[in-house]
Length: 150
Image (cartoon, helix red, strand yellow):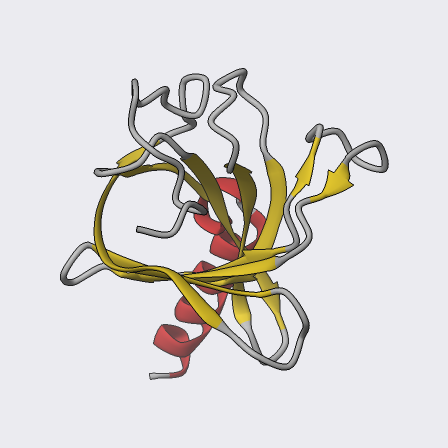
């Protein structure tokens, strides 16, 4: 039993040290919108355990860049900026938070303009995902942005 426990501990230690065991990049496509979203799940330890970081092409520029995102798996948010380059962009004037439900492949997008109230940009909208990075954060033709209320 002691050998089994040592083997399990060694396997866990190796899995933590190997980047591919920690990270998984995926491309999220919003079925009804032009936005693109790329996330990478990484091991961070602590209370959260796993973190999503990535880029959101919230203006549908489709140039392979996006505003930075961070959050827990399946729940990620930011205050969008454009241009997308760090410390250069002007914020969109709101903060946005996505909630993804993998079982149903639906998402909600909520926002706030004042930090005291919230509103829904989108609710119960379909999405798909594919392993690996996005190609130009997936241009979606003439579809609207998720940040345009319908």
